[in-house]
Image 1 (cartoon, rainbow, N blue to C red):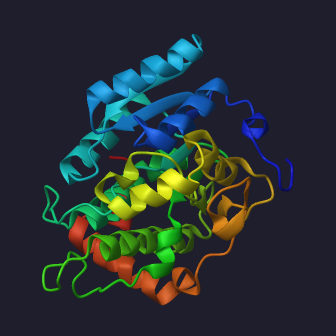
Image 2: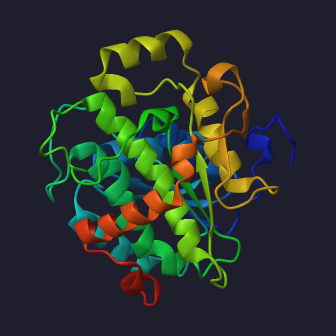
Length: 307
């Protein structure tokens, strides 16, 4: 593998490998799916909207008629949908080689998920928390499997209020809630790494952020859309930190990848440093416990038995 310059040509042959990409109907997720399909992986597009998912799958196949892609419904804002998706995969797949927790919402107006969570923490963190635990038995069946958790530069401004994770007693701030959810993504990765220590054939967990990338994620933020329009890189470029986190050979659990250019906004994917608060293992443990309580999805129930 190259040390700094890293591109789609550095993705290894994925023939026979099964990959799950959440939020794969648009943006970075779709680019992840396309590049992985081009590397011969069997890619599951985990999407909330079937029509958009099918359109994305058709685009991938038009570019590569031999691509193996399948669309499956996953609404991370519904724990029932997360469980149903996981059960379907348990019945269809004997393993999962790579899970990319890519899907997310950004700076949306206050809204609650089907389970009563604030939409951003519910979708970006709690939905992925439950999904990952449900899929761990499949990931542990694949030698050398990985989980890539998508965070953001915004994690540096996160300040989780564990007493009010769902913004029920504070004045709601869409921007602050987004930053909190991205810090939660990082802390989840830290907690998961700790839980997996010492387990045979445990997946390797890494973290990535895309910098500033041209997608529709910033549609709820006028300022975000303006910044994106001025400095954003393409979705393919923005997808590369995720893919390097998935395949770099010189990697350790918790390594963090992002663009190597000015302020990590754009550029070739390299290892970058998170904010110190993202490495707070006490906060990671606290978030883990709260996440189990809120989702009613526990480590013990998921890791020791398939669904």
